Image (cartoon, rainbow, N blue to C red; front, side):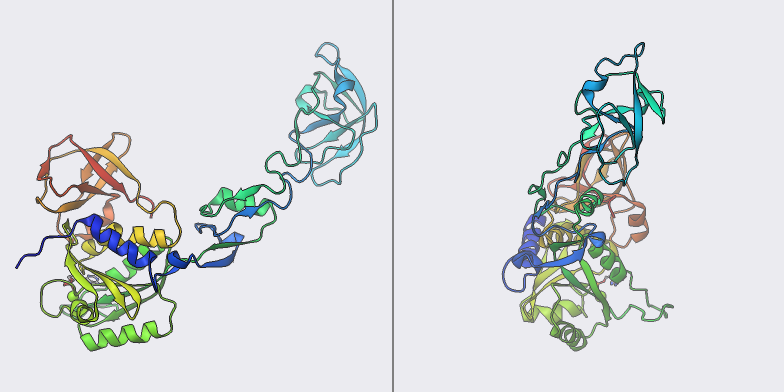
Length: 413
Ligand code: AMP
Ligand code: MG
């Protein structure tokens, strides 16, 4: 019996719903929040608006090194007819706001408070730079080189809206406003479970054994998606051991997603399928290469996504299904990788009926993409040298050199 293969979009929607709808759906559903220090908030998503409680800048200050003056008193100044004023003192950055006596100038530095009575700054370049008296060689209108209080942000204005991703500029703004902690969306918490009796526990694999690369790889992918890899675990191809491990790990709560690798294909000893299939997790075939066998559902109410064991299949599947869902659950507005179009440098064949995601290397300047390595799902060495996935639609049987193809940009690690 052959069941039709499920389109990539359908499985993606299923995994998205699993993480963002219904009971135990994780932080996306209840929009759970937590408070973190601003200095540690890079990459986090703001949960509530931040309103400026004070104006930015907080006081009128000088935009230039120069002289604080009354604009009217230097209105006649010109290069050939400078206006000379006594310098009543200095206003360095950090000085308390002072007063400008009529008929005088104050030497002022960038960022220093504009003294009462002054309404313009003459840049030092337009003067003789004097310290006893100053010859002003240019007239300046009232307001020149003064940054008024609140000119960047008025008190009471929204500094950042909910949903904003906190990068360097946003964190700098929060610091300038004196906001030392912020309410952010809680990051989805993921348990990564590698299955396979071939996986070595010791650093040195015995005969027939291999190292568990999927566990660390997917933990890195989880973190790269803005989620938290809580723990990485390994279990042999032993159904009671596998289910026992899940029971132990989930008993304490706090896990939003269990991500397994291996044990989902058609062979014998398919521990994940044998363990979770009877417990309501659905195992299906997606019209995709690599990464055809997939699983998704809930165990004990907790979302579980089961990826195939071959490392390339596992990571491509993560990109196709898990990353978008984790991003959505974490409140990120952008959930998909940036996609672009590029001309492929050589002809490539594709199996009809399956969406093919080939590893590629972009040449951005040339607008081209090169297929990087063979299509097989074990070539992690090739994947590690790639920076994108070439997305060939299911109906495509092949593309010719020079044809335009869609590309998922993976360069943001
Ligand atoms: P499976 O899907 O369990 O049949 O696994 C397919 C193949 O993927 C295995 O034979 C291993 O070669 C490889 N594999 C499975 N799990 C891992 C892992 N955690 N790390 C590295 N390779 C793995
Ligand atoms: Mg296996």
